Image (tube, rainbow, N blue to C red):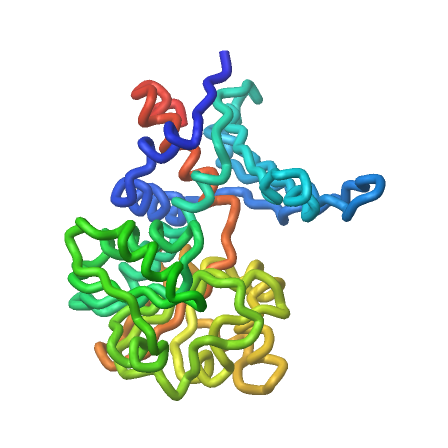
Length: 320
């Protein structure tokens, strides 16, 4: 019988430390991750919707697919525009194992992928974090980065200071100090790790602001027309990505820097799997500026879903 996990169930089953480790293990082994498929859904009298299917599997173990719908006019109906669910199956028999909330799973695996990259790319003594953006992903990025490194101070910047203040209040009581940054440039100067999760189309982070030894984590921009950092930032940094395929089709910061002649595909130092497997080096010195671009991969979803299933049923951990 298929088990069903709510968003609260998923949250309880994916503590950041365990999920970071699970992602590290997932990137260390071979998995099949086909390209995500997009399907346009006609909606009479309204904007078309989109169906996204994101499968991944490990042979003889687990098979999963994230199902995402994006219907832009849902706001007119009082509904969220994006809905997501995850279906986990047995890759040996094709039998259904679990269905779970895909929104919470995506938030947590995205944040923990950035934290995993930070293990290899940020300075080991990094203790100050700047969070650029105040959306649903921001508190997870703060929590995950603070798990990967001994963060003692977090500053939050948002286009609306009220939103930054609200998030700062939400994060009070954690093991680090939290404050609001009113000036982005000065906040960038003072941070060891800068994590961005916005919908920016014009760069927020400028290369001339970056300091030796910093780590820049770019999560928000997810189309070639979007970017959170300018080409100067990309050119100054050692660039790492979750996957080259996703980066070279979706990552606006990288693609626009290439178009402007400031960067080349060969300049990508490594993707996450190569770092985890020890095939490529991460940070090479305390003075290097590192940049991690996240576009997301279905492998992260699968690893998170497997962890959810194993948390609730110890036998499932052995089975997948």
